[in-house]
Length: 181
Image 1: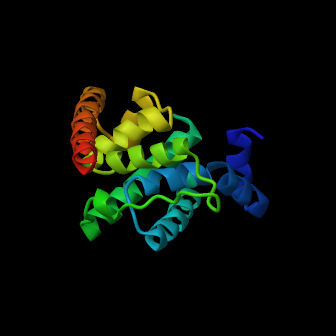
Image 2 (image 1 turned 180 degrees about the vertical axis):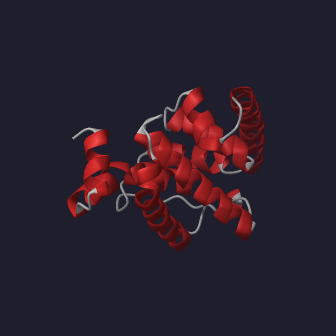
Image 3 (image 1 turned 120 degrees about the horizontal axis):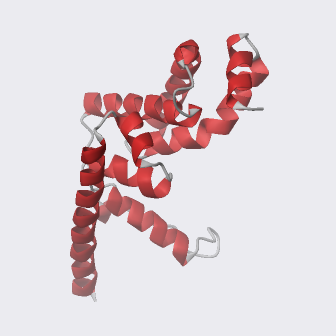
């Protein structure tokens, strides 16, 4: 089913179409919120809020962009507004623990991905957002502009600055690792 058919069915009151929309875009919404909000209970509540907003405002969607971009915009703005209200602290790497061992069957690659995401979490919110949208979600510059409302030059600048800042964070972390040995 294409996006237009899905939207039409939802607007006509189809519960199965709503379920299909949620199933199709749930990972995107979770990812957008997870990049901004750290508390699991808050994330779950925000995901529900996002889908309620999406369904409520679906009649205003005019297919000027992809449905995924529009939904990501709602998720991003919902998460950012929530984070501003809570004034959330950044993650402290000393408190991060990784599950390792036979029971969890976590590979070294998965540990490294988690570790890198924790480093990315130390970036300022705007840097973290554009970096993850670009590299992890594969959004184009115009899509990031639409999601965040930032000018394209700012998006490119933030991605550049985020990479530089992330490099400094990695170098600092490497120094800590060497000092521990």
